[in-house]
Length: 402
Image (cartoon, rainbow, N blue to C red; front, side):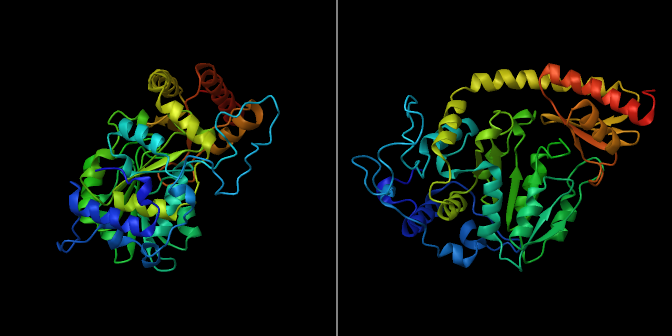
């Protein structure tokens, strides 16, 4: 599948429709069938709100021309306001590329997909909110979530006036696939699956995602923020098998770039095209783009850091299991551990922060997470400080570490 060239104005509505038509005609992606067995149309046409399908995206001259004497965008050609001795290699007086093809190409190579399948935005949270705006009609549609899970699904649903159907995980943090499908009604537009889960740290089997995608006519959104820590790897390959799977990823976790806010959505080109139509014209700034590109050119550093984190995860997990007041340490496919105390987890969490200045996360209010604390795996010395603080806090709250 070839890239949509600048000369054909990829953010123009007519070009978007043309691109969708080409994909539908030539792509090897399977056409999704509805639950009744009747062949459905293009996934975006089938699911998106009508006003989104008819949207005329924002356009500017830079959509067609990015080189030459640029006097089209009312930029300040004298350059950015900054110390005079400071260089300006990124030409920050200019708007960034609205397409980010270099970044998308590098990420496509990493994840084994096509750049036309990738949306890039301000963290994966922008993609989550955008999926609600594109596919869910306010006051009418609903989505399914599986608590305990990432809180932004509910936040975005509430902001967009979309109802939430909750189908809790099992006590061992597995999906209840049949119950999820039973909860689907004619207004259910998306199912959110967090894998590895937050706060559960547990990966979802790809077979469960396939069952959902095969039986559900809406979108199955797989949030893989922590996937690089997981032994089974990413499910991005499923986006070439099912047109209704969207995979979310981020550079905030394994890549160690939470401060630049860069995330991705990977899915059927028709879905990604609508996301590109709806997004702000220059949603990813030049500084973020540059750091993201450098990160994707430094996979050796990623692998080295991952090895250290996974080693520390094992070491900290073993240390927690050895503590007599720790009831359970959940198996982890993430860069954090969820563990359960005998009692008083909230007080222990607060004492660690207030007295020992070690901040973890109390998760005891979540279903199946009673008396649980979540801790991020840090540097070795940070982890040692945490373990000491945990013992100290327990002794302070309960009176004994035995």
